[in-house]
Length: 204
Image 1 (spheres, one colour):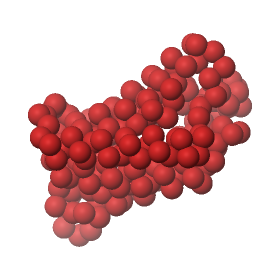
Image 2 (cartoon, helix red, strand yellow):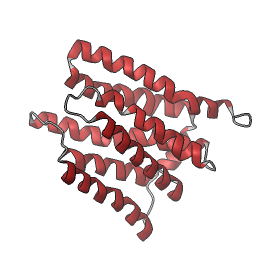
Image 3 (cartoon, rainbow, N blue to C red):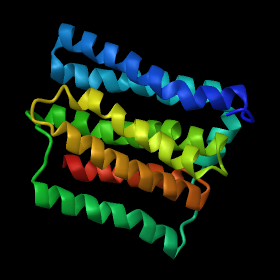
C-alpha cells in the first residue's frame, strides 16, 4: 500500500465504513418503520450515499461516466452476459427461492431495486475499483467482491425468510464474476446489464 494514492487507500478501506454506517441505518429504520419498509428505504440511502455521493466524490466524474458508457457487444461479451443469467434461472428453479410479494405495488418496488442495484452497485463495487486498480486482480475484483458479499448480510438479515449465508456466498461469487466481466471488457456497462437482468429474474 506504500505506492498507492490517498484516494486509492480510501477506496480500499471505505467498505468498512459502508458496512458500519449502513448496518446502523438499517437497524434504525427497522426500529421505526418495520423490516419490510426499512429494507426498501435502506437501499435508497445506500444508493444515494455510497453509489452516487461516495463514488463520484472519490473518482473523477469523467472516469465513472467513461466506464458506464454503453458498449457494442461482440459474441464473446454476449455469452459472458448470458451465462450468469442462465445460472440465475437454474438457481431460482432448483432452490425455489423467491421474494415475498404481498401486493402489486410491492412487486413494482422490488423490481425497482433490481434496476437500482444493477446501476448503483456496479458504479460502486466495480466502477470505483476498476478505475483505481486497473492492473490489480486483487483490488479490482477480489477485494470488492469480498465486501460486496458481506454487505448483503445487512439487507438480507431483515428478511425472516432469507438464507443470509447463502445470499452472501451467492453475492460474493456473482461479484467475482462481475469483476471479471468488468476487467475483461474494460467497462461496467455489461455488468450493469447483467446485474439488473439477474435481479429481475430473481424477483418476477
